[in-house]
Image 1 (cartoon, one colour):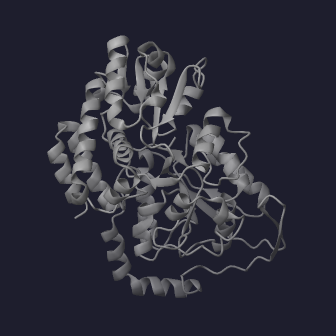
Image 2 (cartoon, one colour; image 1 turned 180 degrees about the horizontal axis):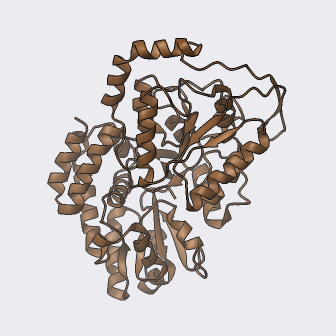
Image 3 (cartoon, one colour; image 1 turned 120 degrees about the vertical axis):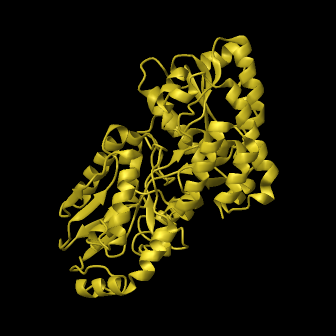
Length: 458
């Protein structure tokens, strides 16, 4: 599960200040390491031959094994994430048995602790080989500070990656215009989950709801005809409502307005932004009474228990349904794209970047090539409860729900990046956005929240 509760991110100012002030130190460090122009440590080049196995994958015959130890940091220390990353490294070890791997996980804080560690290490020119990171604008400070390597030729030219990835994930992998990271999974955000018995008893057809504002009438019908609440939700922390608002904006006003907001065109889209906030405020009337004191998992249990009709969340929510005996997809629960967003896939992703001053450049190159392969993504994603960013991964291991998500992704006309998870907003602006949405969930004041959203980009 990719939790959306984030901690402090590295601001663009932090990186630029250190990068500017530390130019001499960085150059000197590179010279001491004997690296090339990008400050990488040198290793003996491995010699290898590659050939195609007919599936778009390249098989590699290694002829030398002089690799520095690969150090990868991540926050997947429990649950589905741990199972997935274990499967990933098992596959990597099978393909490259001579590369020694040091998984150096940093648990806690829903990723905050890892971000803090990475910030210090990167600014001190002592990065790990790679680490778990959201792609897109989240990596922009690293790009601005010239801390990431262009891997367009060394990694993205392998395993048919450029043709197998759709445009949205590819764009997220090159926040500064050059490929610097490899997305390994996708969690979809524009989902509306529902308890099938509840909506049937209420006489509501989720697939017929055409836009977010129409969800209000559907929830009212649920509460008039059943004992369930219209929508399970948590407001204890703001991130769930931030996600919800983003999908309302996307579904009610379309992709162009959504993207324009992420580009800071707030005043130009004032009415759309304020109306979307007003729609979410109307939703609040149909939330569970304990929304302010429970977690998202506790809210999700209300779908399982038949206490709520609808639930918006990333598709990690389906992991709870799959783990519940007797609660089967399409018989007990269902999912539709959030109203108004059919044909669009809202992306939240994890990726592995390639830092400069890399302690194991050749091993890291092999690891990132592997992460972009069919084999890696077929091992990792079913256990993670996510789908591959590659569109050519077989669906056999994914089950009915994720298989349908894979079809929706492959057939999507557009893929938009998550606002809440930092793919669409750089850290400093995302932090300001989070402050505005915290104001919203505490006051439900549309005008005040709009003003803060406008200020968030200044």
